[in-house]
Length: 183
Image (tube, rainbow, N blue to C red; front, side, top):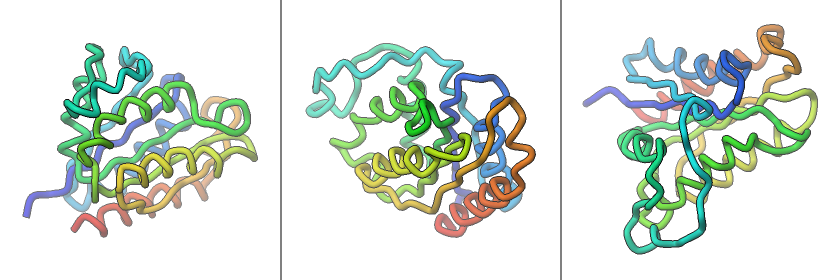
């Protein structure tokens, strides 16, 4: 049996962000158990918003030529996908997260993510974490994925997440749970 392949997607616009740290913690928890992992920083990529052309309904592919094209095969080959976002405006995912989630629409038509294991992470200050994880988890459910869990972390300024040991425990448990479901 080949080792599971888990991809971590951070949708934070900040370099070395609190969100990045939690996504990496999930991947680290899975990696010692022989999972293959990859970290992807959406903000470092050129990904345009969906233009609602619906051509993907028939073709199963998006016509927009940008960096999302390099992510499609990675998502399709992944066994597990964890998506992290900072909480923006007190209640929602980041713009990068929304664009990324929207651009997975071609997979929905063809059920390309069906039965993959997913998880979500949201980092914010006191409110909005559950709302943000729900946005991600709703997309995962629409894609007919299996949700392993979610993580909410408390952070306001850069590096604050390091003061939230509960978030790192949850991230570690999410990585272990994803691996458990995949093996």
